[in-house]
Image 1 (tube, rainbow, N blue to C red):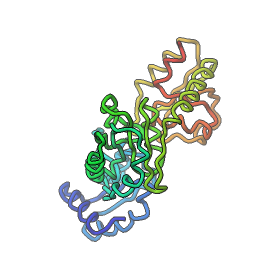
Image 2: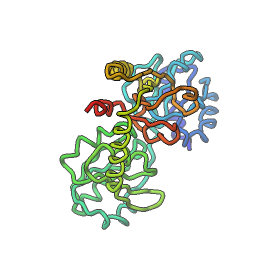
Image 3: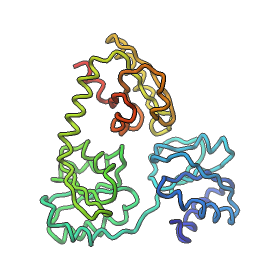
Length: 306
């Protein structure tokens, strides 16, 4: 997982910062290899602390903890730099995976009914995109690369929306392609490298819209709102929360600003809240059933007053 080449690359990045003590953040999928990386860095004179908190992306920097624990550098693995301000220097190691998309694209290419496509994936597969683009172009497709995308940020893909007929997401897991499908009217085709299947997610769009409209209509009759504010540096939207609170109170609603690093159902036990409004991670609304509360995205609040 962290082979010799990756270990040396990371050591070189840390050496440029003259790192003495490093705080290491990794996503869950890389946690099984992080001890070997820590051993390697310790042997090379760098003290390490491993964060065992979940890491949801570059929005989730643990810079305050890093500084409090006496580290001089935060090593953030697996995500791209979102240009956030940090209390200590951050070294980003994006952990690219050299995966050949071409055999799977070749296998399922006849199922792609569109000729103008935008090729998308996560940051790990950035290096794999160009060869897939050339292969598709040789087979008569018009291709643009809209990478990388995050679950909450699809701007790299959206900028090509008017130029293409569909998006082709290549990777694993439906989280990212569904996030893109929610933000676009163009079909999102999901080429799953694990299942080796091609799925058209555009059929999910009407279902998502119906659920969204139902949430909003039901929320219009609610009396008590909890506005969720995350203290994660890339999710902190206090100004939005205060503005929403003013609007709700002006319309006769009760509104409370709720703060947490990570929101879980257990943290809200005991609170009498009819509707939660999410100003944190944009994908929290998908967890409404777990929270046993209706969750609206902060961008939907304006529709409550229409």
